[in-house]
Amino acid sequence: MNITEFIILGFGNFGQWQSLLFFVFLLVYIVAMAGNILIVTLVTVDQHLHTPMYFFLGNLSCLETCYISNIVPKTMAGLLTDKNTISFSSCFVQFFFFSYLMATECYLLSAMSYDRYLAICKPLHYTTSMTTRICIQLAASSWISSLIAGFILLSVMLQLTFCGPNEIDHYFCDTYPIMKLSCSDTSFVELISFILAFAFTLPPFLLTLTSYIYIISTIMKIPSVVGRKKAFSTCSSHLIVVSLFYGAIMIVYMLPKGKILSDVNKNFSLLYTILTPVANPFIYTLRNNEVKDAIKRVARKLISPKVH
Image 1 (tube, rainbow, N blue to C red):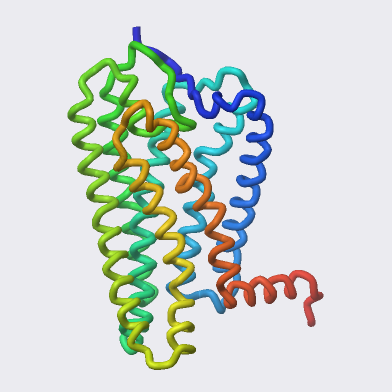
Image 2: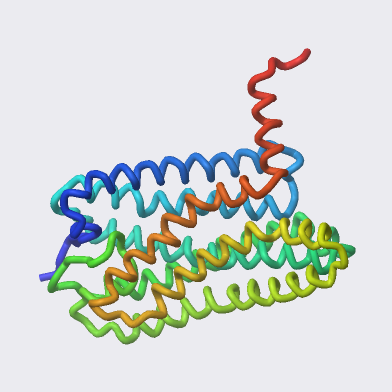
């Protein structure tokens, strides 16, 4: 008999601390949503932020609101109940959006690194190389290609049969925790999953890494300390986000999939599913004077009456 629902174990081992954990997740969720929506709003309404760098940042913040909303609300609901269940269809919907948004983020981050490479290493050609049309094409290709990959992975995952245990040892529906519960052969699904993961993480990672090798090399050749500091400040925020995101992914998906390491993987998954979305607004605003100035300009427009 095929199962119709899964039980998400989540953080059940926290026992009496689950209520406190609920409020921590709630606070993180509110902060992440408010911060990322603020950035999307600023990039949309402030003319000074209508540049390629902030166009990609707006896309990233939009993605992060979807990313964290796909996982955290259900996780919070599970912390308030003794048995956190999710229907078969809801689990695969969550899995699809998780896979799709993660792949999209990889390519958006690489597009942002390429933008910084052109701005720092090829400043004379920047305006002709990074036009509005090219920005839209890069962003659109990130969203659309990842959507196709997400549907391919979902379609092969749905070919699996589930007739045995239904407890997912994770706090959301991820690829390997779901495959572990299947009572059919998963070798083909594992192959497709590996190919798609390879295609949507390694190329953008290598592009990002190469971009920053050239960026750092160019910055180190700037004679003045002030010049080097100013150049590095334009890409340091993005470098922090990239390091957090890829560092966590490598730890989670490259470690052996043993029972002993399941809790380690679960905890490190928090870095890219929850910490990155909540940290992005702070990293980009606290280290960026242009965003701070945009906040002040928008605030003045809202507070001050319009002059007729």
